[in-house]
Image 1 (cartoon, rainbow, N blue to C red):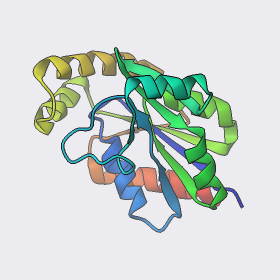
Image 2: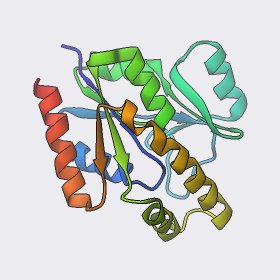
Image 3: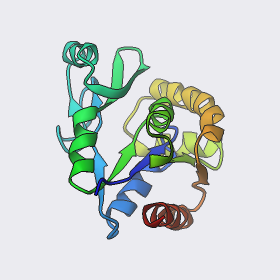
Length: 188
């Protein structure tokens, strides 16, 4: 039996990755769909575990070959995408496929799969809280953080296109709400 598809999207710093890791620790037969990106790895990121890191030329060659279910140039010169082969491999193994993708990617995957996919939008409690979280990460310059905040304000306008919006004001509550939605979808 083919696995179901669960899509997570959110502005950077909303807590999406933390919630996804929480779900992966539960006995829900979930498997993470590793995205491809043309950006350089951050400290502690490993190719094939965190992302498939491709140089820009290779990424665009794979786009031209039709290897991606969805892809987007999220920031100038920085692309992210979901490889069709990754989704098929996981689904055919009977695993439920969990996506951690940008907002436009999430909408595109949902459009492609329709009711076969559950699309969840993780929302920060406020833009100011989001800025604070990004600053606390200590991974990006102030200029990069301001670009991420501006992009987040735009991405928040897409939230109504998702099946559910989860406001991550209290992490434990957001994890519990998400786990209940995913469990219901898988068992439905």
